[in-house]
Image (tube, rainbow, N blue to C red; front, side):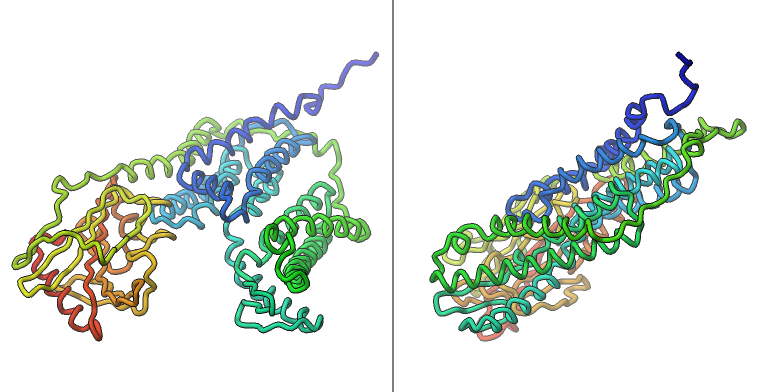
Length: 498
């Protein structure tokens, strides 16, 4: 028997990939805010568009593991360009987190992981892992930006198919009215989830087959076109079945989404049949000897110093963010201030006012009455810190729940910006709201301005400033002119503007 050659490839390649996997797993630990938001998105049963996220994460980890099969032994190769890019992107991610920008923060998380691989392990390992980490792009909320385009494409396609099928129907915006009932082609009917799943499968096939970029483009365009057409057929068939069954069929009453996945599975079988008949254009495999040649370290290069700098660049932004996120102290006096010439009265029961600010740390409501019998209701809430889920401009936040905003404007009262909103409460009662968002000692009329100010103050000051929401409410009569003057007078009389 001949002796085994002294070749690096006889070493267990799968063992050498653990450092890369551990580094990628460390990034969401360091940036816990965006990682927690992404976790919630992937487990959101009410909006299941991204519930495939953890499956894609497992596939991404398997692809990273697989990337070392025909590669030289893994070694640390600190890259200066990677360090610079990692520092910049880490800082942007911290700013997005402190500002409460959910979608950008979640989208940047895999990019930071990829740059961490580049900074510590060098370009060769980065290039091998780039597709595996980029594969998570199909589980990021950036796709929601095209949801309305897909929705209205579905609306017009279904209109055309129903017209051709000679179904008696009345179209009203995104609603379809039949003699037996009505359908709404809502945002969930856009087919976004089917499109993302089809593109992810097509991209994975191209990677596993070693396709050229040109063939990958063809396969992904085919997958996207078939997924969009399948969703059009899904919505059309549901409307048609509803018309024929007097809205009593199971897929109409119970299982829109499940029916769609059955159609998707059939569509994917047809897609795979067509994909196999697209001419193959594989990328040439590099020579085995050149591929096996390990990257040699430069003896004069200060590897230890470069490695220490790379680790510092990786750790510094999240450490800075953790210092900036230290909570502020709540006010010692929880009672709302009483302006001069006003007195507190019980909060009215007949005019309910429900304010919603998710995750707010402390809130109070109080009603005041003037000597002339005029009433002003006040809401005040405090955040000890703001982040991706506790912020002024949260998705579910509302200064008056179940009361649509009819008109909004901004004015300066005593030199302070105030946002005025006219809202129509249940019972056709018109109210005027005066909103103000305060960060530290600075008031803002716009909640996003307040969030940006919070990010700047927390990152430069090393701790979270107290964030306060204050809303004044007065009922309008024929118009809101007198209510505006009443609220202006009330604010002017406040002894403590906080």
